[in-house]
Length: 568
Ligand SMILES: [Zn+2]
Image 1 (cartoon, rainbow, N blue to C red):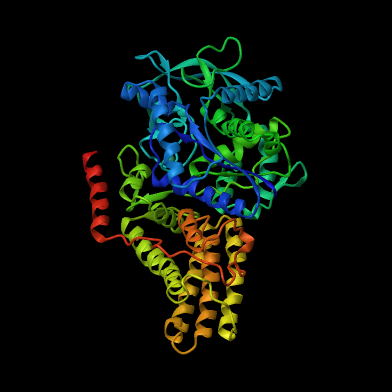
Image 2: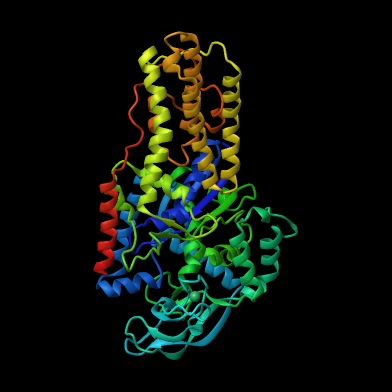
């Protein structure tokens, strides 16, 4: 086994189904990266799960007249199944309600408390006296002081991404009763972030940690660095890591009734408790993955989570000693839908579990489109028309067409037996040399978290194959020069076999189909670009890799979206 990696995707709030924005932000990129690492024999733990705490869930439960657990159980199971069906290949999909997680989070809190890493403060906080309850950040709504958005929450503005505290909101109101809340005294534990500014700045800016090189800061995305630097330069404030709430992990101290750990304190620790569970099930040592400087930790998240993964969680990890910090946090920007912000409450979304019914067995068409339009450096837009065009004009016409021609010709002329490469000419040699370069080029982009660029290169290989066949016309040459036709097909089959490897991170279902057609198993990234199939090897007859998507189907999807919108 190669190097150890802990790859995490943001724990998903278990209060709703998954939509394409989630997938494009934190799950598909992570899956592409993990599949690539595994093809390179690396030792990977790919960690995710449900975040079951937080006020958003209790808020929804209140609205629906259910208990938080009833909501969570439903969505945890649905989302776990949806991720699996979409090919997101987690090592474990854990839950923060598990005992091992509660214990781990409490251990973290207790050891920080013993080391005097917290400040304890009594402050005035918003209280809704019509329901006798302190209002958690998510129960308070008001105007964002930064961008003037009217519906910012007490902890964050979802419009501009700023992290907020409730008393910064202009005209706050309780989202439960709609009343203006009053201020009342309460005691909480705070993480004094200002104490950590110096080392955080060096770590973020220069990649230096404890006076040695931790990572190359130039490999971090500019928007991630930008957000962190603006946080640090405006001065880090102490953040309360406990809340007055009846749902969550109880504070493990005496005289702290009615208080739980803040969801953003316990959720990232969920990566560690999930790793513990995974290690137990797989006979591994979890410490090897979290406490060994040889292990690479990478967090895949959306841009709204940058502060928690780049500042708060690293502080918590460093205070614990022995824990590693992330090598990179390649956060994505947001994906929009048909020109508008994705919205669960307005039902302006494409839900994954519904897509899997509407487009049965076509997971790769969506994976492909979401990778091709991924919001890697700026917000991007998903449209049904673009999805159709990418499926029909790229997957069907380029990749599918190339593979189909190669497989059909091999079966038609040589009964599926791979023909010999006899004498190559200058053009063949140029194709063979070009083929050799693709695995390196694609790997280079993937290692830099530039998955769009990597995907384009993968398709360029299929384009190269198509051009080679079109230029050489083996179906014509075979009548006069069978030897020449054999050489052309042998080379085309090597390209096809390389594609079956290089496509796996992006479109794993297609990669599997292609390997089945070619009758190949156990291929690794390093095999790509070389002679993979020897002459005399028998391949199977082909099925079409992709199906054309017709206009009326796309119109139906657009209509469905608009109907949902009008109903809201
Ligand atoms: Zn704002």
